[in-house]
Image 1 (spheres, rainbow, N blue to C red):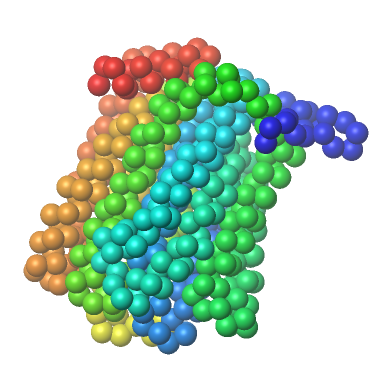
Image 2 (cartoon, helix red, strand yellow; image 1 turned 90 degrees about the vertical axis):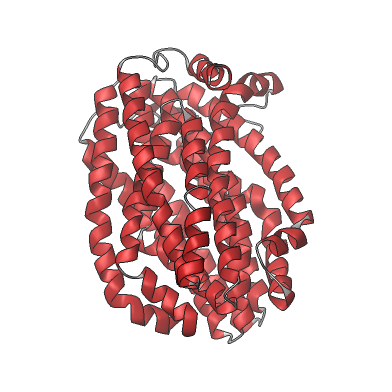
Length: 485
């Protein structure tokens, strides 16, 4: 990472590709078409990972030990936090690269990606170390006990040290999407999914490594993500700039202006999830296992929503950087329509598949009840989650990343705690799930209103002048966020 990569076959291949392939591609063409193309290709990649994640849970359920599925549920809550931090840094990298491309500054985009990557890896090392030495306290905090806690800790001790590797892969993939290279970003996740899918049964069953085998398969998959994403960045988009501590110091403020609120916003979800896990743990390990299964089914069923949240950002960012505010609003509104069009048929399919899904995991009792509850009209609430996701992408790419922090923390505190608490009191374990889903409705309404106001401010040139150099624009955004608000 310390040198600029890209020479191939005796010529400056990387630099040529950077110049020819780094131009902003979302400034023209049909917006809905761009969103669909980016989202579908991203969704295919996400599905490769999510299906493997679901297979993990299926293989573990086949071992016939109840504590294993619950342990994965508890561990998943902690891993969600580390992944959210990585995604927060990727949001910063993706937004800054997209905006620089929109300003027709591909060299600056490469420099910013380099600095985001270095800062992110340094932060990931510190954060992962902190999590690692506090695993016992953290798992106890979310309700893990006895053998289930021991299994969760053993699983986490294998995966937590690879957080910096995961961050590299996620940030590089976000940069590929910002360049409009949706298919390359898709290939990154497909490679990771294939690696995990091949190694899972070998490690879990053939080598008889059980839960730890699943963890080691995921470790190797993370290295595959990072290696593949870096390969594409180096070969297609000029690699990275040379190491300069002065340049990194100069960019630290604009990076922090997006990364800090984005990470805070993303951490809100695992914090809220930790409360949900602790609440449902009061109803036994079967309830925790049921929620863990739902956690694996959800991203498969709603993969396009997850993909759209990552795909809309570069489209908004490039057009904002170019001052094309009508296309910013058009992209946002098209996303709202696509969310509704997608979620309704998915909910219908889930309703008819709820029994096969429960049978596949041999779910009984409260675990089966939770699966049946989710795979019905309740999952229509994912329309509102989608609104929140798209709103966050708009905030992060329009120079107001702290908006996503406020919305996400509101969603995962006021939109989780009282709803889950009273839901549990009234309906038990099912009330926990009902409360978790219901709280998102109010947060989505607020998020939508805030996004509309922000786009109006952008159209009135009340945010930043997108014609300014990228550093100046982000520095100004940083000043506005931290001194005027």
